[in-house]
Image (cartoon, rainbow over all chains, first blue to last red; front, side, top):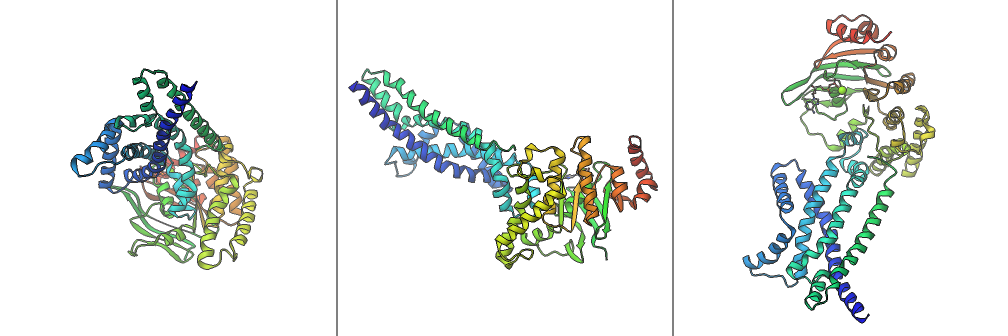
Length: 215
Length: 269
Ligand SMILES: Nc1ncnc2c1ncn2[C@@H]1O[C@H](COP(=O)(O)OP(=O)(O)O)[C@@H](O)[C@H]1O
Ligand SMILES: [Mg+2]
């Protein structure tokens, strides 16, 4: 029993790292994704081309490779290294998820019929009013299901940070297994299941809240 | 000078000329019906009048005020364009109601935004000095409009729970809420099931008796004959024939008008 609580508390500590990586990624990648989506919808061709190429590269390569790149390449090129491995993980995750989110936002915004904008304009609304008062709520409703998918994937992806030696939950469990204690490895699944379960309930609640209209 | 004057409008997309020198005029309280086969440029004309498209050439005047003049090269500010738009209202073929707002909120959204802005700038909106006062006026006006289109009971419904005909009647009320000088309709009944067209056409007929100036693009020839003061037949971006319903619909002179109308007469009467 003692061993169980000991393992649990160590795993919890590791899971704290996962949660931190998750939280910061969400907070930074969502606004950054919005900015990137604006770039990829821009009428200014060079900006659009650069943004879309960026998104293509990020989505077309493994997150694990991006983690290695962020962690190892700057020290090779410049005289800097990451004091904190977590910082490198956060940078890689933010870039990766911002690219994915930007595509979801772009899809959501481009999916709004032109007629919604025009109806706003002929009623004398400003562009910003049309965006915030007419389009935004419809975009949110449209992107909620793909966003919830992506966010739940992010929860599980955080365990990838162990490849650059962030001591997250799976890394902790691996350390136990090296000492011959295997079961904590499977026990980690419970942590992810509970977290993802809570998120699923939250998103279902939000979707229900927006159920009163159809877009 | 006529109340609405549209002069020499030309509009091309890339190299296709869609409107080739369109001119017409309309007196206050008159109803103009525009008929013509699909692709003849009717929608584009309405969109130019509502400044959703910018014509390459032409001039648009309402009540003596020049709203658009292609010879005037000075760049219009966003505010000016928005103000000019308010002289016109637009009812779309596909309604374009805002799905996340109730019927009533669809009506008051734009007037409230306008009132807030104008009171901030000029200290006044349609006689109201404070936003609160303006809101009250806007609410009363919206209630009256809902009654006019017969949808008082649907006040708090969302658009997705209304029939197409009801949605279009809300769209008409929404356009009227800003008191446009000229209300434009782009095939207001084309997206509706046949049994629902009547209720919408009746609302438009009702507006005629309350002296609204209207431009109605329609395929409902008998409606055009009964309600319009003036009919324009468009073909390939030009006004092929123009006159009273008696002249254009009963007695068309141009062979193109004749053949267009004969296609309809086969079905009606
Ligand atoms: N945004 C656009 N870009 C290119 N061509 C257009 C555009 N809008 C309309 N057109 C063309 O203009 C012509 C007239 O269209 P429209 O005004 O919609 O006709 P109608 O409403 O009489 O059916 C059509 O040939 C159409 O393809
Ligand atoms: Mg059309």
